[in-house]
Image 1 (cartoon, rainbow, N blue to C red):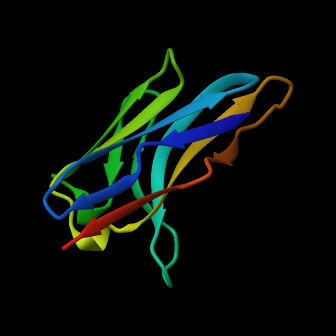
Image 2: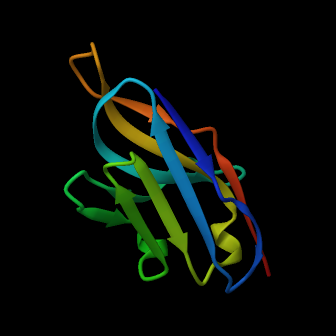
Length: 120
Protein backbone atom coordinates (compact mmCIF):
# COMPACT_ATOMS: atom_id res chain seq x y z
CA UNK A 1 0.00 0.00 0.00
CA UNK A 2 1.28 3.44 -0.94
CA UNK A 3 0.01 6.97 -0.46
CA UNK A 4 1.12 9.58 -2.97
CA UNK A 5 0.58 13.22 -2.07
CA UNK A 6 0.79 16.21 -4.36
CA UNK A 7 -0.15 19.85 -4.57
CA UNK A 8 2.09 21.72 -2.16
CA UNK A 9 3.88 24.91 -3.03
CA UNK A 10 4.51 28.54 -2.24
CA UNK A 11 1.61 30.96 -1.88
CA UNK A 12 1.06 34.40 -0.43
CA UNK A 13 -0.98 34.90 2.69
CA UNK A 14 -4.66 34.89 1.87
CA UNK A 15 -4.17 32.57 -1.05
CA UNK A 16 -5.31 29.01 -1.67
CA UNK A 17 -3.79 25.63 -2.33
CA UNK A 18 -5.26 22.20 -2.88
CA UNK A 19 -3.53 19.04 -1.71
CA UNK A 20 -4.37 15.66 -3.14
CA UNK A 21 -3.49 12.16 -2.01
CA UNK A 22 -4.10 8.84 -3.70
CA UNK A 23 -3.84 5.44 -2.03
CA UNK A 24 -2.87 2.47 -4.15
CA UNK A 25 -1.91 -1.15 -3.75
CA UNK A 26 -3.58 -4.17 -2.26
CA UNK A 27 -6.35 -2.29 -0.46
CA UNK A 28 -9.26 -4.10 1.06
CA UNK A 29 -10.79 -1.12 2.82
CA UNK A 30 -9.93 2.39 3.98
CA UNK A 31 -11.33 3.68 7.23
CA UNK A 32 -10.27 7.23 7.99
CA UNK A 33 -8.08 9.35 5.76
CA UNK A 34 -6.57 12.63 6.74
CA UNK A 35 -3.90 15.25 6.61
CA UNK A 36 -1.30 16.05 9.22
CA UNK A 37 1.34 18.72 9.23
CA UNK A 38 4.66 19.33 10.87
CA UNK A 39 6.29 22.72 11.13
CA UNK A 40 9.99 23.10 11.94
CA UNK A 41 10.63 22.44 15.61
CA UNK A 42 7.06 21.32 16.25
CA UNK A 43 5.30 18.02 16.60
CA UNK A 44 3.20 16.57 13.85
CA UNK A 45 -0.42 17.58 14.29
CA UNK A 46 -3.75 16.59 12.81
CA UNK A 47 -5.11 19.10 10.33
CA UNK A 48 -8.24 17.32 9.12
CA UNK A 49 -9.63 13.82 8.86
CA UNK A 50 -12.59 12.17 7.20
CA UNK A 51 -14.12 8.75 7.75
CA UNK A 52 -15.44 6.44 5.06
CA UNK A 53 -18.90 7.62 6.05
CA UNK A 54 -18.01 11.25 5.50
CA UNK A 55 -17.63 12.44 9.09
CA UNK A 56 -15.10 15.24 9.23
CA UNK A 57 -12.82 16.50 11.96
CA UNK A 58 -10.72 19.67 11.79
CA UNK A 59 -8.09 21.28 13.93
CA UNK A 60 -9.46 24.45 15.50
CA UNK A 61 -6.80 26.51 13.74
CA UNK A 62 -8.12 25.59 10.28
CA UNK A 63 -11.87 25.43 10.83
CA UNK A 64 -13.69 27.59 8.33
CA UNK A 65 -10.65 27.83 6.05
CA UNK A 66 -9.81 24.25 5.11
CA UNK A 67 -12.10 21.61 3.65
CA UNK A 68 -11.34 17.90 3.44
CA UNK A 69 -13.04 15.71 0.88
CA UNK A 70 -12.76 12.12 -0.17
CA UNK A 71 -13.58 9.90 -3.11
CA UNK A 72 -14.08 6.39 -1.79
CA UNK A 73 -14.24 4.88 -5.26
CA UNK A 74 -10.86 6.34 -6.21
CA UNK A 75 -9.23 6.02 -2.78
CA UNK A 76 -8.31 9.69 -2.78
CA UNK A 77 -8.48 12.47 -0.24
CA UNK A 78 -8.11 16.17 -0.94
CA UNK A 79 -7.54 19.18 1.26
CA UNK A 80 -8.70 22.54 -0.02
CA UNK A 81 -6.89 25.26 1.88
CA UNK A 82 -8.22 28.80 1.65
CA UNK A 83 -7.23 32.03 3.35
CA UNK A 84 -3.83 30.60 4.09
CA UNK A 85 -1.72 32.15 6.83
CA UNK A 86 2.05 32.11 7.38
CA UNK A 87 1.47 29.85 10.39
CA UNK A 88 0.09 27.20 8.03
CA UNK A 89 3.61 26.74 6.69
CA UNK A 90 4.62 23.13 7.24
CA UNK A 91 5.20 19.80 5.59
CA UNK A 92 1.82 18.20 5.06
CA UNK A 93 1.43 14.45 5.27
CA UNK A 94 -1.38 12.34 3.96
CA UNK A 95 -2.52 9.52 6.22
CA UNK A 96 -4.77 6.54 5.77
CA UNK A 97 -6.04 3.87 8.16
CA UNK A 98 -6.08 0.99 5.72
CA UNK A 99 -6.76 -2.72 5.76
CA UNK A 100 -4.88 -4.51 3.03
CA UNK A 101 -5.78 -7.88 1.57
CA UNK A 102 -4.39 -10.67 3.67
CA UNK A 103 -4.11 -8.53 6.79
CA UNK A 104 -6.81 -8.89 9.39
CA UNK A 105 -6.50 -5.42 10.87
CA UNK A 106 -6.08 -1.77 9.89
CA UNK A 107 -2.81 0.05 10.09
CA UNK A 108 -1.59 3.56 9.45
CA UNK A 109 0.04 4.44 6.17
CA UNK A 110 1.74 7.75 5.39
CA UNK A 111 2.47 9.68 2.25
CA UNK A 112 5.86 11.22 1.59
CA UNK A 113 4.96 14.74 2.68
CA UNK A 114 4.52 17.87 0.63
CA UNK A 115 5.81 21.32 1.55
CA UNK A 116 3.38 24.19 1.94
CA UNK A 117 4.94 27.62 2.39
CA UNK A 118 2.84 30.71 3.02
CA UNK A 119 4.62 34.03 2.71
CA UNK A 120 3.49 37.12 4.55
